[in-house]
Image 1: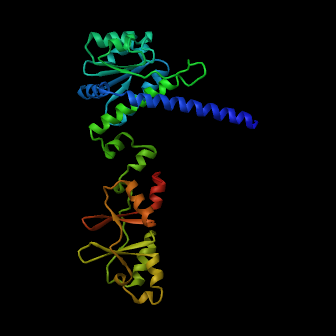
Image 2: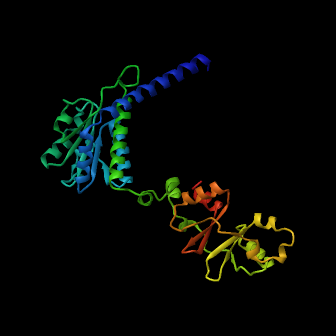
Image 3: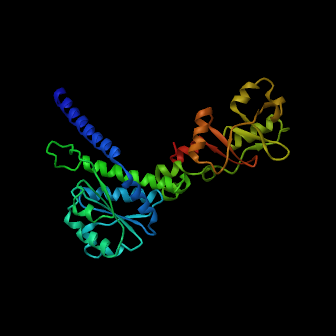
Length: 319
């Protein structure tokens, strides 16, 4: 491959991205009260958001439906052609339909449009032509701005699908913000994979067999506890069972001379960093990274209830 060929590829890629960036800027600048009306229409629905589109718009519709569903707005993709062969039964009076079509004249959408009009199901249309059949029939018409497709012929859906996808994301996040959707709720819909791991709670990953000693325990015995548990650290609790301090490898090095003549309280570091069991695993990793530690005691009401090691996060896929 010659350098001129590489330059040509890169120039084409940059032009495509620039064209699509222009489309997104025009989309953002053109948003108005109609967008807010679309959000309110979805919020009023007692059922689901039925997202539909044909061809490339259909692929975008599937992604929008998935994003809505995972962020607290029940949603489902319905294929317009399949809708004409029985799947219209999936669309109820409690639902709201979000229909995508760049031209607004996609023939496969006709039966689904008619179904929404017959049963007075709210219809939100997204298209680039305000006078199109879809937008004229819609209760809320979201018009995509006039922006050229990014291919040289102007025929391949590129800029238009990018704008439609971004508009769907904007709807989902506006709804998510209004519903005050929390990370904990997000984890309910993402129990697996990297996202699920990052949103796990510390209590889900911690070890409950905690290495603990009393303040008056000789260091000879504290070292045995520290070695047996394998965390490279031991906690020191006071008479009330509260975590008073911890002993780490660093503490051992600082008291190397005459170590075995000391008690746990004399060697420990007081007021150690801790975390609660309900904290997100990602928050625990942030504490470990900030203070360059590998183990963290999990404390509830001042009492140690667990311990977590950086290896636990690695195994879970948090980091």
